[in-house]
Amino acid sequence: MKSFIQTPDEMEDFVKYLEEDLDNIKRVKKRLNNSEIPFKFEIHPKAETVNESASYSPIKKQQIIKTLIFKAGEKFVGVLCPGNKRVDEEKMEKLTSSTIRMAKPAEVRSETGYIVGGVSPFDLDINLYIDSSLLEYEEVRPAAGSKLVGVCLNPQDLKELTNAKKADIAE
Image (cartoon, rainbow, N blue to C red):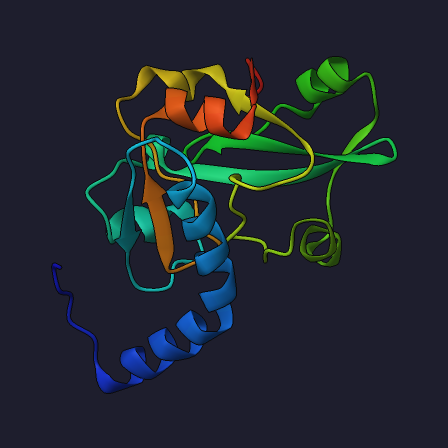
């Protein structure tokens, strides 16, 4: 295991967030362990933004996956979006034939069990779309149910494991 340095205050925060997210991290680990795909976890200080996350990691912003939850009419859908892009809501509306809006944090928590910024795509019971640009990379990193932990894996494996539909939805 590689190490990283934390001040006492940073360590206190790290432990607090890890304790809050532990059940979700275990949930993701169980789902991935039950698959046959190769993966590894990346642990880093708490990151609130893609820029922060990228500053802690050798992975590039465009390889960091934001799992975004939208309300499409009466249903929820998820989008696996590159960290350096945003979802084109007009394209999503055409794709889903519904009016689209970002889900509110309470809706995200209720629908997925995850917090905004730590949504893992691996065990969601909603339709998922993956932006086609993500499939160009050898490795991508979505959240593992935490703002402290990500999962590094091949994007094609991610697409298959999550049953995500490929679409051009990011700009």
